[in-house]
Amino acid sequence: MPDPLLDLLPKARRKWSRTDPVLARLAKEHPPTARSVEWAPPFAALVGSIAHQQVSLAAGRAIYGRLEEIGVEPEAILKAGPERLRAAGLSRPKVAYVLDLAQKTAAGEVDFARLADAPDAEVVETLTQVKGIGVWTAKMFLIFHLHRPDVLAPEDLGLQLAVARAYSVPRASAKKKMEKMGPLWSPYSSVAALSLWHWRHVMDAKDKLS
Image 1 (tube, rainbow, N blue to C red):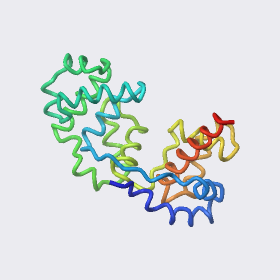
Image 2: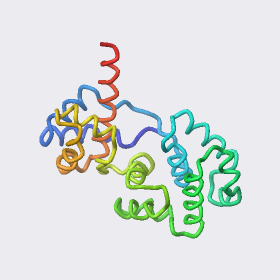
Image 3: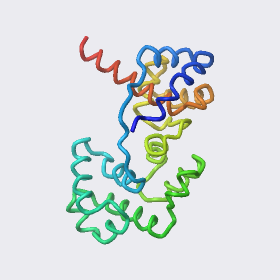
Image 4: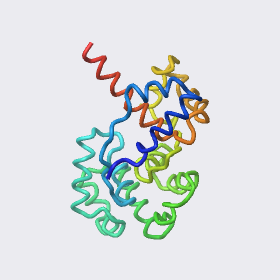
């Protein structure tokens, strides 16, 4: 399926042309490219996020592929147990995280059907009760799985680097800069993130060619 957030880009650019000309310009010159969104059940999406933490993209995909052989559902994860999850390539802390997520989901403490319509803040509050899921992971879930349009994620390192370059501020000041710009980007902060991520990727590629 296409990314529904990118459908909001024209409206977002019109808003930013009044509130943030820098973002409006870079989003016009290098608009984030349309991409196909791979749908996964919410539990599986979060297990995938945990599997990818602090490993390369290739390693994360390999680990998740082995988890798929087990079954990426709460009951299958709980039945597999720690040793089989370790054999799939998860570190001991990640085994604890995945099992905690499975236990809380099975117990109804994490109710994905309810979270689908819950306010952003409630989604973050609920997911961060799970071991190994912090605010950043919860916000990425909001953006990439629930496609919420107005998620401000100053915690993201990639966004910090993009903002530092785009707005000519020190890297150490980028997080505060994003927090300040949030009201100017709203209600399209998620679209702003997609635009900044893409723009930084384009700029990095140009740097390598120069």
